[in-house]
Length: 59
Image 1 (cartoon, rainbow, N blue to C red):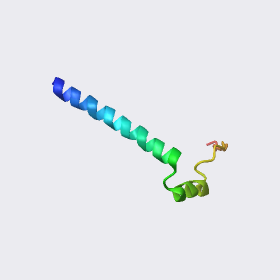
Image 2: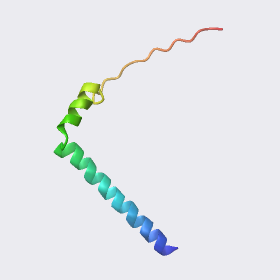
Image 3: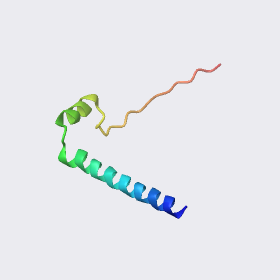
């Protein structure tokens, strides 16, 4: 059981390292400038808060 636990912990650490590396590559180095243009065009990167008004009908 201890060997399985060690393998799982090593896999989790390796996955975390790859996650951090990929986040750095995509956010700092900007390998795909077209992807950034698409997200700006779609409005994904805006930090604006839009109020949603909900109406309820009485029965």
